Image 1: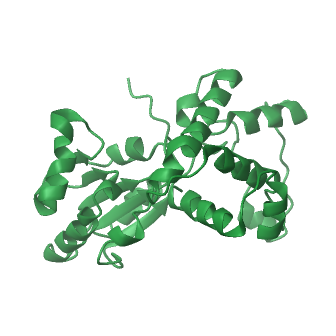
Image 2 (image 1 turned 60 degrees about the vertical axis):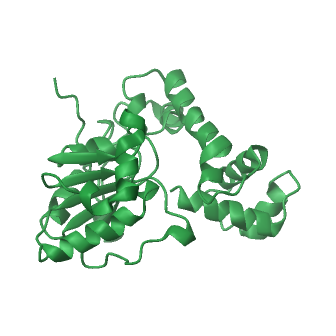
Length: 262
């Protein structure tokens, strides 16, 4: 039984596959990039697949051109683990004369500066941003309110529907929009969100560029950024708010690493 919940980005992927040779879907881990991409792919190469001693990753490193051979659209999952694949995809798009819909790439991080691809992919690879699930995708919002209409000054009649006041809104904020949390209790959904933060602090932020970072300071920075969400707080305010001894240069480095892991 197909339990896939249609995502807002689906129509954008379909659109860009009809225009560009390749489509890159970027976004945080666990937001559903691979699942969505698989809906459109005819074949796939997963660089995180441990089969055969990570045979897919080894092939990508030894022969990127051969690794992307397969029925199209061909999905290249977590392409940033071998950045040469980007240039291989870009080159293949050129060889095929700009034929659209050849490849789908997914990634939750940006390669280190020294491993950046040779070519930007402009004109060959379209970039799409995917995030966690919206209230509309979760079936909580009806989607009847138009942001464009609001900006045009139109009056909009809307209600919270099944959301029970402030407590219901707080519950939604705590749950988050992780696909893995669909159907789970709020307590379990919050544990999933906490596990994501744990992974960022303990591992991902250091893997972004190979620089070891203090998980305690990463967590303090994330807490400060959360407290200052939707404010005009600058770097100096963040530095004062951290509650731990961190230099301005260190904060800048941590912020850059967080951006690299989306």
